[in-house]
Length: 108
Image (cartoon, rainbow, N blue to C red; front, top):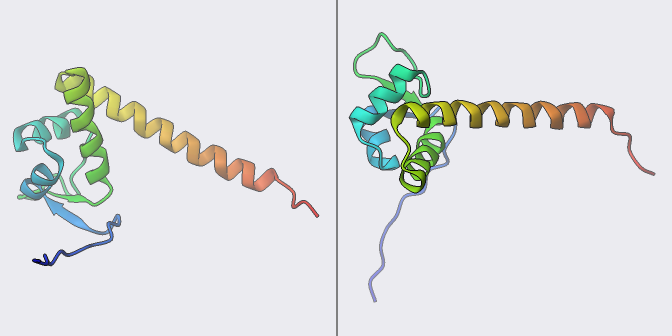
């Protein structure tokens, strides 16, 4: 019986990925990621810096984008719009939860 060592890392917003790392972990190509940056769907930490690095928050976004692209055969412009809309929905859900928490009264 063989045992494999695996490393688990908690992903947080302060974790950084290079462009090649983000491409490798998401399934997207580096060129596709560059185009998503051009469309404003994925933002490097410093767009002026070379090479680019990305916040850990973009890994799940880009993985979702890859699955959507494959499942629905989306072009990159449609994919960028979809990512933007999903991010907006997420932000609105957080805002709604916050408002609900402020207006709810403890039962007792």
